[in-house]
Amino acid sequence: MKIIAMIPARYSASRFPGKLMQDLKGKPVITRTYEATVATQLFDDVVVVTDSEIIFKEIKDIGGKVMMSKKEHECGSDRIAEAVEFLDVDVIINVQGDEPFTDKKSLVKLIQVFKEDPKKEVDLASLMVHIQDEEEIKNPNTVKVVIDQFNFALYFSRSPIPYPRDKNVDVKYYKHKGVYAFRKQAILDFYRLPMQVLEASEKLEQLRYLEYGKRIKMVETNVQGIEIDTPEDLEKANKFWK
Image (cartoon, rainbow, N blue to C red):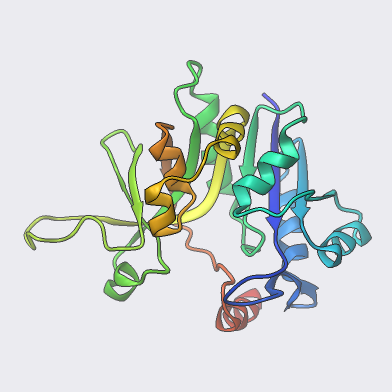
């Protein structure tokens, strides 16, 4: 099984433009993410795929592998699908460019899902973290996921799900971490299928997979990490790096 890591790296970001080129302890965020992914030694290849000449040059200058996107894309999955369409690969791990604290143990768990799936019943795998803080549960920037008894995703939402109507029920809330593992065919299907109502409403690309009947296996991790979405996150990351 050939497994590669792809790091989609868009320069513009609505909440923090140019965040991937911001300094994190002496190197840009995207460089820290790329180096951390390579350092796991889990992949046959690690490639940054970007729409930015600036990011392209940065990865080239450090001797890394990088591809330029040929088209404008709505989301990271589209960008990766274009990049892998003609590559000889079985499974693609999507590592977010703004997550420099990539956790090796979590990635190992994702890869194991496919190694233990000889019938190819799993289309995607992704990570989730148990959360208990009420503010985080209510925060629309924290994407929640509900799962079935076999840890397959039932739904993703920016709203608190499930809604705690009965306060006596011991409900566990899970935050979805945007690290995905795809079978190649699953991501190519995503690329060719139009957006549906749920994805358009919540602005969550993972809902397109569910709307078209793809199966997403969720893997629990206890590593929260730091996603750099705001200048405050970057400040926190610099402190954490010490």
